[in-house]
Length: 485
Image 1: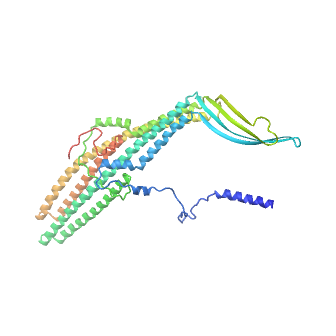
Image 2: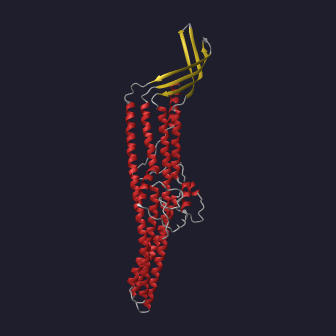
Image 3: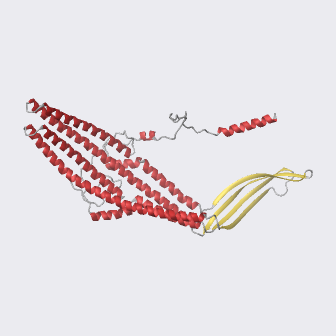
C-alpha cells in the first residue's frame, strides 16, 4: 500500500510537470501546407484600426495636407519615435548603475543540536527580514561619466534617425503625389488623343463618302482610334494604381478614395554651380542621417572610456540591517528570541587579472570606433555625391521641360496644318495620323518632363536635409524665383 502511494505521488508529479509542456506544431509533409490548429492566434491585427481611420476626403487634398496626414498615420515615424524613447531609457539605466542599490530579503531556517541521544535534543526556527545596500561611490577610471555620455549619444543617434524617418516619409508622400498628378495629366492627355483620333476618323469617313478617299484610309484611321482608346484605358488603370500608392504613402488602405489637389502650374528656376557647392556643405552639416552617424561615433568613443574604466579600482559603500527572530521547536531556547543586526563599511574592488577580458573589451571598443568613423566618412562622401546627382537630375529635368514645351507647340501646329491639308486633299491620311501620333508623343513628353522636374526637386531637398512639412512650397534650396511657363 505504501508503494502504491509512492507511485501515485510520482504519477501526479509527472502529470503536473508535463502539463506545462507544449508540442511545437510543424508541417507534416513537404508537399502539404501547414494548417493552423483551432484557437490559433498569430498576434494582434491592426487592420481593423486601419479601416477605422476616417479622415476628411470629401475635397481634394493639397500636398501640404497630404504630408500632415501622413505624419499623423505613419507607422514608420511612430516606430522611430518609440525607438528614440526606448533609447532615452538607457540614460536613466546608465545613471542608475551609479546610484545606491537597496534590496530587501527575508528568510527562515530550522536548526537542531543534539549532545547525546539521552541528554540533550533541541530544534530552533530562525526567521526574519533584512535590508542590504550597495553603493558604487567612485570608479577611479571615470566610468560613471563615460557610461552616461555613451547612453546620451545613443539617444541622440535615435533622435536623428527619427528626424531622418520624417524626411523619408515626406519624400515618399511627395513622390506619390506627383506620380498621381502625372497619372491624372496622362489620363487627360489620352482623352485629347482620343478626340484627335476621332476627328481624323470623321475626316476619313467624310472623304470616303465623297469619293475622295479609299476604304483603306478609313481602316487606318479606325485602327489609330482604337489604339487611342486602348491607351486611354491603360492611363485610367495607371491613375488608379497611382492613387492607391498615394493612399498607402499617407497611411491609409490602398482602396481609399483619395484625390490630390492639382499643383499651381509654376515651375522652379535653376541653380548655379556656386550655389551647389554651398548646398553640398550644408547637406553634410544638416542631414539627419549624417548627424546620427556622428552621434554613433561619439557613443563608440565613449565606450572606449567605459572599457578602460573597468581596469580601475571601484570604491563601494555597503550597509545592512537585519532582524532575527528565534522560536524553540523542541527543547529550551537559550538566549534572546529576537535580535537586531547591522553593519556599515567601505571596500575597494580592483580586478587584477580577468583573463585579458578587459583588454579585449578595450580593443573591441577601439576597433568599433574606428569602424564608426570610417562609416561616417563613407556616408559624408555618399551624401555629397547624392546632392550632386540630384542637382544634375534637376537641371536636366528643367532643360527637358523647356524642350518639351517647344516640341508640343510645334507638334500641335503641325497637326493642325496636317488636318487642314488632309481635308483639302493635299495630304494623305497617313500624314494626318503621323501628325496625331507626334502630338500624342509631345503631350506624353511634356507630362513626363514636368513630373521629372518636381521629383528631382523633391529628391534634391531630401538629399540636402531640407524637406519639411511645408511640402507645398517647392522652391529650391537657393530660394530662386518661380517663373511662369
